[in-house]
Amino acid sequence: MRNFITPFFLLALGLCLSPKIASAQYETRIWNSYSIGAPLTENLDIKGSFLKSIDPTGQEIETAFNWYALKLGYQINKDWALDLGTAWMTVPSANRTTNRIFVEGTHRLKLDKKFVLRNSLQFEAHNNQEPRFDYRFILSSRIGLRKRLDFLNVAPSLTYSLFYNIGGAPVRYFNEQGEEFAREAANGFHRGRITANFNFKISDPIRLSLYYTNQHEFNLVFSETNKINVPNPNTGRIQRPFNNQHIIGIALSYQFKGLNGEGFLPINF
Image 1 (tube, one colour):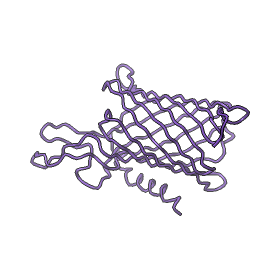
Image 2 (image 1 turned 90 degrees about the horizontal axis):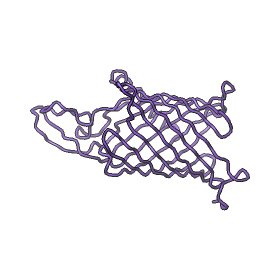
Image 3 (image 1 turned 60 degrees about the horizontal axis):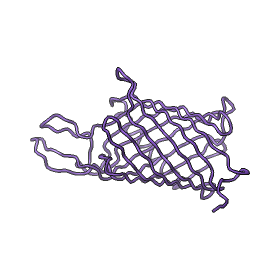
C-alpha cells in the first residue's frame, strides 16, 4: 500500500494545481543533452552527461544555461537502486556557475504485466552561487511500459516531479502599507514538472529520447513568509518570480559494454 502513496499524492497535487498551470505565463526552452555510461562492475556503473538549454524566442538564439553531471549508480537488487553524483550549471547571463552534490534512491514496482512504476527521492546540497535555495528535495514518480513497443522500438513514459526548497537568500515580505515585516528563506514546495517521454532504441548501445516537459512554479508552503513570486509594493518589483516553462527536449545516450559482458573493473561488490 505504501508504494502507491507517492503517485497518488503527486496526481492529486497535479489536479489541484491544474487551474493555476493553465492560467500561468510560460517561456519556451529547448533542451539538448548527451550522455555516456559504462559499467564498472556487475552492479556499479558510471555516467557523464551534458545538457544545453536554449532560449529560441529572442531575435538571436541564446544559451539559458549549460549543465554538466557525473554520477555513480549502484543496483542494490532488482527493485532498489542508489545514485550519487555532482553537477555544475553555468548561467551566461548571470556570469555564475553553481555546483550541487546529490544522492537519489529509486524503487521499482511492477504494476501488472504491462506497466512498471518507479518512485524516487533525491536530495541535493548546493554551493553559495545558487541564490534560490541551499538544499532541495525532489520527489518523482514515473510510470512506463515493462517492454518496448514493436512500433519504432519505443518506450513511452510519464513522470511527475515535485521540488521542495530549503534555505537560500531571504525574501522580503511586506504588509498592505508597504512596510517590511519579515525576511525569510522561501522554504516549501515551489516547483513541479510533468514530462512525457518517448525513448527509442536506435541500436544496442544507442538510445534517443524525445520529450516534452511542463515546468510550473507555485506556493505550496506552511507560512505566508515562505512564498516566492512576492511583490515589493514600494518598487513594483517581483521577488523570486515564477519560472514557468514549456520545454522541448532531445537526449542522445551511449552505453558502453563491459569486458566479457561484465564491468571494466576486475572486482565486484
